[in-house]
Length: 481
Image (cartoon, rainbow, N blue to C red):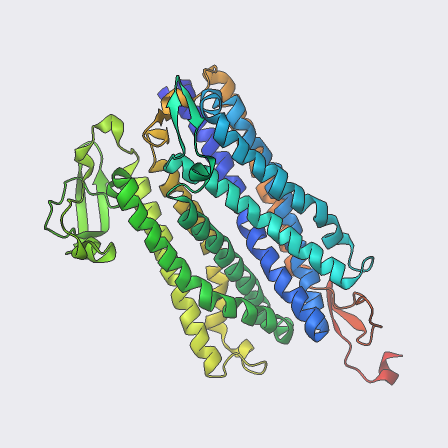
């Protein structure tokens, strides 16, 4: 097959594999560490031991995700030097330094204080430990800032120009604050937080659904729900802002997202394609359900009809995105999941207001708990779908409008790239199975409620009811002795 002898296609596939796999882990860790800051802060404020035990339990899943995220992130960045050397040489003046900021600012801050956060519970003052947790959270989210800054600059390059094949920076801050930067960072920050909230809520719902310590996990569930009340609708709004930016700066990508082949002339609002079967060869949709004037209302084009909404045929085939079906349905998966999570949040909030999430009633809400369990992995799918739209929709450019992807790849033997691609596939498959095993093991065992609390004598001895599950011993003191 032509694919196996095409160095550029193999390098793109390898980067896609490593990026998609890597993204699974920081998505959870950058959001979950904010939750750890919240529950540890609640413990310091209230001295309620449940919050302490929550911090200890959820930090195990955080550490697992952090470790795999580091292990998979480094090989991904190395590919800029191995598989994409011409690109790195051309844009290293800016792109390389921003990636360096991510390592020196974000990763080093995380690494410096992670040991205290993990092993310092009974070794340092609780305030020192809490500050360490906060600094780990800052470091984790600084990674989001710098990675999204670099990627946004690839989408809307600013602050310089290409001279003799190299990008020369003339305004560093303008390059950092490129047009996509603020909305992209906000969109990704909210995505990591929303994904983490529904994972925490989904795991908590699993315990409640199975009647395992429902009172204990109802606290985690309600914290996740309370945060989701703000995050879920805000994410939809920021996503809308991102769509407006795509319309303005990358109209070819918008046309691919909507599988819109024909240009809608000025003065006429565009229809919104709800579902379609794009036919890239025929340059049309074989089948389509659309909402009249829908796209015009969504992007507020009704207010300004002076400009046409361009269709894909406005660009030559070599200058527009390919894989239209993938872009089209990835976008709809992302949007559909966003609205589903917001709807689930709304329904759950109504249950809360009606008193159905009280300690006595929450375990009875079986269908609601099942819905949260079902929702737990959906955030991952939405994030991965969003990155597919973002990066595949940018093609054929690696630096939008300035450097083509085909010109940015290293001239390597296809057999070498195929070997490394298959090697990554095998190793990452093993890592994925390992993470599922250890993650499920942590969840099956549940929290340890017999751990000593710093500065507090143990007043709630724990008994092991099932292998690995400890609950407070509520028997009379005579029976305990």
